[in-house]
Amino acid sequence: MFDCGIVGLGVMGANLALNIAEKGFRVAVFNRTHATAEKFIADNKGAAFAGNLAAFGTMAEFAAALKPPRKVFILVQAGAATDSTIEQLKAVLSANDVIVDTGNAHFKDQGRRAEQLEAAGLRFLGMGISGGEEGARKGPAFFPGGTLSVWEEIRPIVEAAAAKAEDGRPCVTMNGSGGAGSCVKMYHNAGEYAILQIWGEVFDALVAYGLSNDEVAKVLENWKARGFLNSYMLDISIEAAKARDTDGSYLTTKVKDRIGSKGTGLWSVQEALEIGVPAPSLGAAVYSRQLSMYKPEREANEKQLQILIPAGSDKIASTDASAPEIEALYHATSLSIIACYAQMFQCLRDLDKVYKFGLNLPATIATFRAGCILKGYLLQPMTRAFEQDPNLSNLVVAFAKEVKEGIPHYRAAMGQLATTTSVATPVLSASLVYLNAMFQGTLRYGQLVSLQRDVFGRHGFERVDAEGKSSHTWPELQ
Image (cartoon, rainbow, N blue to C red):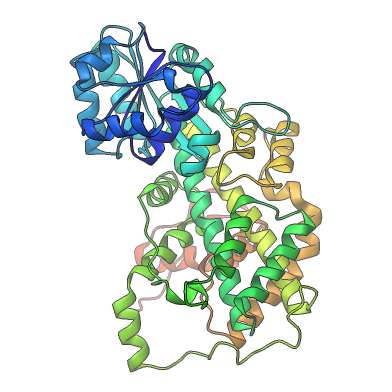
């Protein structure tokens, strides 16, 4: 009999099945289109572990082949397809069998599924996966959440398949109850949105300064060598910047500037707004994608109103990474990325308080260290910061040295970009706003707007020198 089953043989499902089978577990596979499952088996018949794989033509045959309690991993499209698959599994599974949904689901949906399945005598776990096609095959990061006993049932399989960090630990931890795992994956994706956007803005800025794509890649390679920003997302940014099309031109010039998304970034921002956590960089990353999707309107606007400063008109004297303008941008990038992580982790901390997941934040951060799109040097000091002080007021505090050194450069870089180029910098700008606001004990705009609300709506305001609500006697203005 088989140790586990996988439903859905798209890129992620097929590669995860190969990964688990290679680790010595017997894996049954099922796909809605059986020809796809048959082709999967045929394509991998030469693998040393081919004997650990088998495809089944019906859901009933698939379920009957699994060792009890059965363990089924769902890798189909999130949403209706997942719910449909769960309904089909309910008809063929028995009490105490385990269903694991690995899709990019909203954590509230996972909580709903867990309640419904447990009421039917089954067990459920929501478990996000990061690492894409390559990660699924070689070892991704996993983000399980739900009932601890369910996790223990699948733990040997998942830990074996997971990426391993430098210290040998698997990049997976039980994140907590309910939809905790999917919540972590949502904010993982929100951080991904924001940091990818930062690298896009850096590329745009350097091109505006007159650098070619190859010169941009050379600067980014220099930044990578410095260590602090070394990361997978920087690696893919370098590759994308220097990639060439078949005619020898830079591939970036042939790509339509419309950025797709699957909803997790938006959900994360909505949840942050709902509970009142300031996450402007995460929000700006979502808005930046929405701006990109308005291409026809942008093109029409540009024809009707020319306000842009041509790229390269503020060409800098040197394209070397040591040029002052590029060095300033390096610090802006570093601090913006730290600010994004700070917002991401603060959202998780506050949602943990609301939904009582039981998150262990250092353990969760440690799972990002390998196999995952967020992997990079910065996760090491971030993990240590929360291990040393779980009540750290803000992650940025742990990078006091870098912030003090870099903030003047950050401000200078943003000032120069704003006055001498037309580069749109939604996340770089939002991150500077976050740093300026969150490390300022008194926000003067807050004082004035509080009084404005009292003038027109008699909402009252709080005083620094007295408890409770106060109000002022205002003249009639209408």
